[in-house]
Length: 66
Image (cartoon, rainbow, N blue to C red; front, side, top):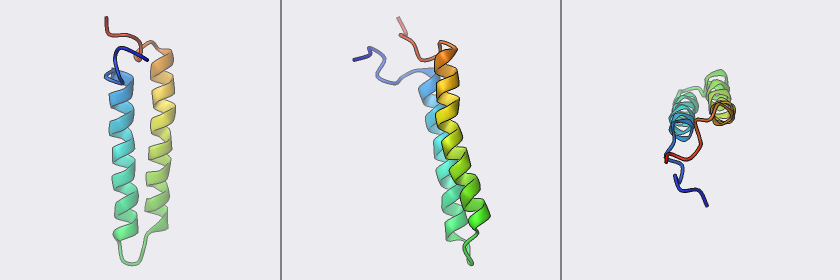
């Protein structure tokens, strides 16, 4: 198991971006009538968080903090 337990710039950035995606998607679902385009933008942002994490990890921003 890693010593950093996810406390890295890559992990924090991915979590923040995913949270924004969930908020955007949730707003799209709460509108009356439901706005599916806004919902799908939220889904895309959330998926982009995973891609962003992978890129940042390959850049070395997910390594050990020691």
